[in-house]
Length: 154
Image 1 (tube, rainbow, N blue to C red):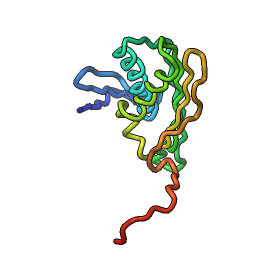
Image 2: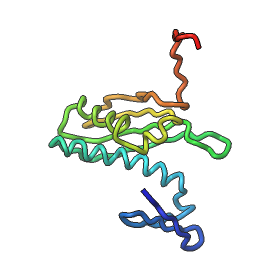
Image 3: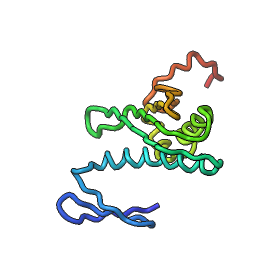
Image 4: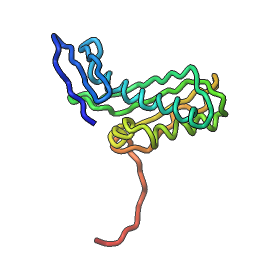
């Protein structure tokens, strides 16, 4: 993958990819907001494509992302909570599987930040809250106590 950023004027930049281009208008939308939008859109596209590949349909999809950032610069993401709200012709179990598959396997943007950001999610499917504030095992963003682990002496 290659992207080229070209300064246009003031705080406007053009991003060119192999597939097209778009204008980044700072500070109207900051680069970190574009970054978060890309992360969320990656998962949202999974939530449309996976059901379609299974002969199912998702409608009214809205994914909200809320980030807590570290205070000192570079102000990295500490936590990201995703809230999925959608309707479909599948049951709640399948709806949750789609979200989990996106988060844990298919969405490369989420998996890029997963080692450093504590991830959690909630799902409302067909108007029913089916899970709330579920945590994903991730890297530095979580403090996981594995207890005492026996190992071979070094």
